[in-house]
Length: 320
Image (cartoon, rainbow, N blue to C red; front, side, top):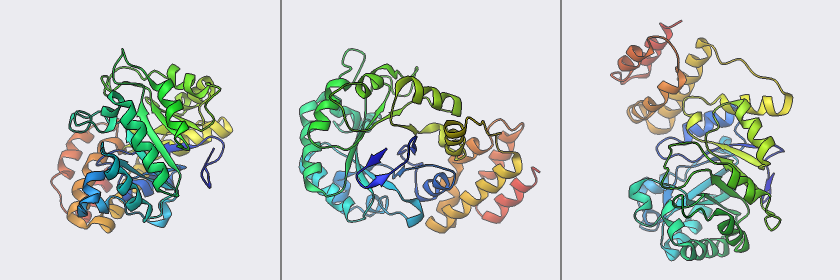
């Protein structure tokens, strides 16, 4: 699959943009463990054009994270165009537009998945962003607003017509949020539409290698995107790629490896954000790193009270 000048290989496995999760440290860990493409957390266009420092920092990345996309969101055509230009200055491989975020504070303000209620505005924003920048522009969206408005097949054609170079589809409506099962049949319908010639990336409910291969084979997508299943589990990318390419199921990482990788992740977070912030923001990943470990809840509660790397390392090393 090729987007712009970036060749992502035959069966790309991509890290989804996740707010408060896909920071630089986590993106680096996922790239180290096989992710073919990563995205920043989504960045507010309004905040960017107002030069809000926190939002501008979300666009920063290190070379080892490439290839990377910067994702922006908003509902104002001019602000989105200007935000895209600001994102382009950071020289990512691509710029992605978020038309899929379902959370209330975004969607109910007419941004993210909220634009599934205003397709003309969605297309106007996309057209302006595509025309403003030289980088490839991609879009991530959902099937529709609710069960009665699954418009993705028509929307995909419209988005392609204004110049996007790839489309990621999460197999749920906004009304579903993250509940129920993702419906890949409409993703497949978009992919098999003879009018569609851009890559179609499927997203939703892929949490293991077998399921990933099933989605590739059954629905014919060009790539798959992993979101929540990657939290505290960067190994999932290499597991999927190995199974896709070789038919080999890798054994789950053992406890020593889980400890080593989680501590490497923590070190990166501290290097990039400072000790206090790095430690605090790492806390959301431990449940994933040590999922299924008997008695880890008590250990995790102990870790949550510690504010130095050495203390956390000491607690984790006692597990082996």
